[in-house]
Image (cartoon, rainbow, N blue to C red):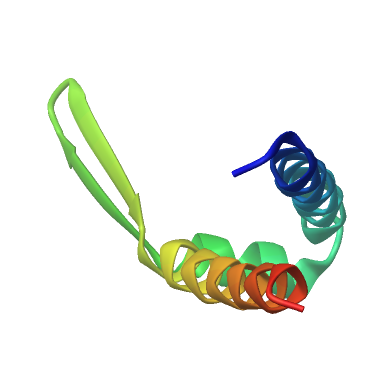
Length: 78
């Protein structure tokens, strides 16, 4: 892998992270999205130990990252 393609990959990853951060900032203000992420959370609380497992958030982020990865791979294979 030469430096040109590595630089392109790093640039695309940086843009992807920035877009993802902006989406997270906006998602907190949209009532439907914040309710979706909070309602799909499994909470286990016993004594002084608590565990939060955001099942819906994990599924949504997995689908989103899969779509983004497919777009990046298709862009790089041109």
